[in-house]
Amino acid sequence: MKSLWIEHEGKRIFYADYSGFGSDHLALQQEADEAVGVIAGEPDKSVLVLVSFENTDASMSNQSVICKLITRANHVVLKRALGGSAFRDAFYHNHCQCEQRNPNHGV
Image (cartoon, rainbow, N blue to C red; front, side):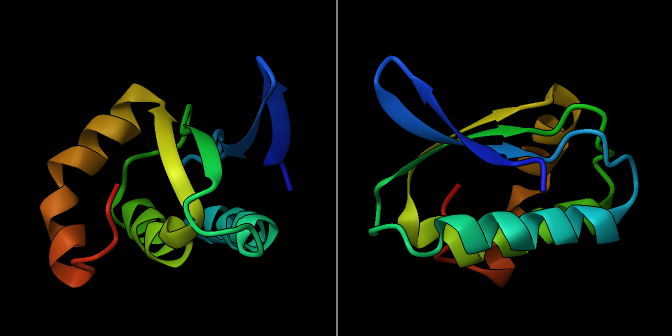
């Protein structure tokens, strides 16, 4: 697993490293599953998350993986910052599709 806890200015942040997966949604799914497993036991609305999507394609398959991930992990996330502009822009462009499938997911 590439994702890990980091500390910045005294704050504990979960760095969700979803970079470098290209169009491999199965590998992205594995990383996402492991990442959710790490933060799932944290108290509700307590986790700061920094997400990197550099060199991960904004395919619908990859976006579907992330949409499901957000639904599973959102209860513990206080704030989330996204990096990887192509993926981020495509995800927000298609966000309404994710919202319709999971109206309480919140990004």
